Image 1 (cartoon, helix red, strand yellow):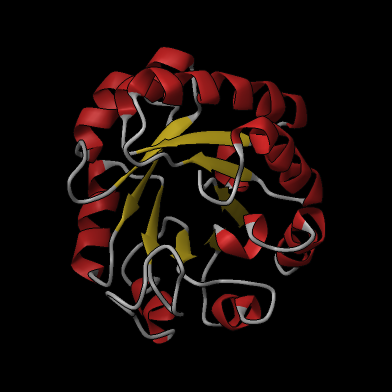
Image 2: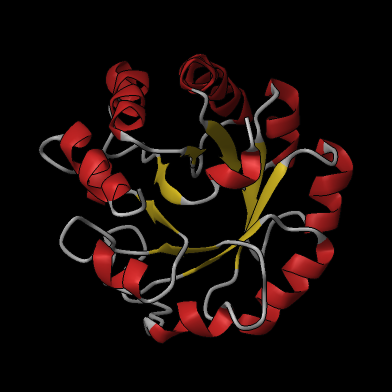
Length: 209
């Protein structure tokens, strides 16, 4: 697997409120079958042991289909279960700390909010991709920290790693983000809150193929 080539297209982010535990793995598999290249396990306020259990269950899907599994916030869990990498924010481990734990081949993504200088620093520290949001109102992020669509093209003048968009992205507006320069889209409710998870994933993934 060429992991860098995986960093273009659809990244689906799990949500415990949209995904009942008894359907959790099945919903992820449907999204992957639809074309998601990355699965990001995001669990807020969940015990580490439960996150690790979910992560191991998801690995049975991601390995089968040759897609990436990233753990949100916690490099130690990613390391413990053998995930492909981690996504970190301002309050989490640094890129250097995550890299030291996970090794040279791990994928490390960084939330940059609306700060181009943060993206530059993240790339210099060894991040594999940088994420900017939110371009649209989001059920998971509200209206806080809205960024203009121009940010995606602007940041690509300063970094060479892939640029991800996150925040309120769905089948109705995703093309705007792609056209604005984003290499990939990170989607929560736009896939897992859709009436047909597989159809939503397929439509979003198709924008990048």
